[in-house]
Length: 151
Image 1 (cartoon, rainbow, N blue to C red):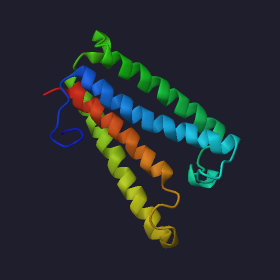
Image 2: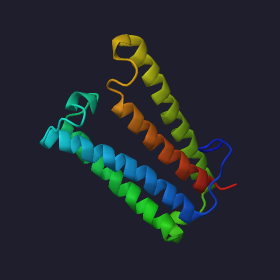
Image 3: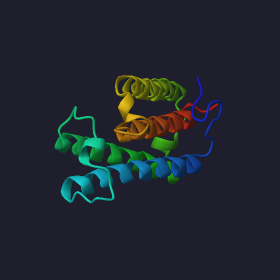
């Protein structure tokens, strides 16, 4: 099983850390954007209904997003500084991350297809912010898995 992009392996922990940091910044932008909407409701951002599916109350969602960001930061910093306990290759863990990452990514493709089939009036971008950023998180997992798995 390969990572993202398919058949590409990240060999350098620092390059991997940079790519992970970029993906983390995208996710941070989503978290900050939603927080701004929740607190201020600026007109230049989509309304709150566009930012979450409603499965979790916003406070719980924000807390989980914060934990995800902290974890992403620790792992990314560990790769950028080549910390041995983070930058060490673990093929079994890498294979697990790749498998989970692909399931996660493909589930977002299915989620999008189901959403569009059930809500044709909402095509193509209405209420898709969560789907897009779950895809960002899935990509983050795939990139990490590509590095951890090694060749």
